[in-house]
Length: 228
Image 1 (cartoon, rainbow, N blue to C red):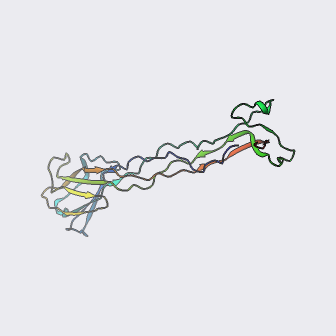
Image 2: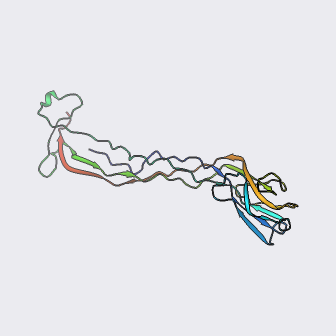
Image 3: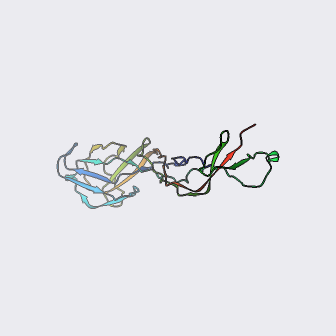
């Protein structure tokens, strides 16, 4: 007789949560913490840190402080959806035989009564003519990323080709939004960034539930003889 199906699937896993560069910075005309006229600069989603020229350079008189958004951990990629757990089953074979010469490993049985009951001392066994598996596993999912170490470094340039440096490098770690004062005789014309530390984080995988049911058809009941 088939065992009761498990209600959970196994095998989900999550890939690493990689460090991602931020792409946005804010330039302010006043020293930190700012509060003057400001200009937001966005290098675009998926920026790889290569030299990015600003659409319009920021004039030196408008350049007193700068805030660089922190790096972030990317979502973890889940593994492929697993298959439902296997269902153990026993099979019965009807044949003409002699209980005195039953093969090893076989249990001699007889047909149950019309109402499906067995006589006293006999053990009832229920089998199914067909077992149709309608089950599937819910998709694998990953929880939010955690851990890891990501430190991004931002470099500022007075020309669009990232050759003339402006000020010192600005670093930001996970969850940090530092503000740095800056003075320059050159306009802010381009930025470049890199990850100076990149230790990926991790995510916890879910344990997907089984969706659907096992369909049992044509039950048959037999009764095994008492052990002697």
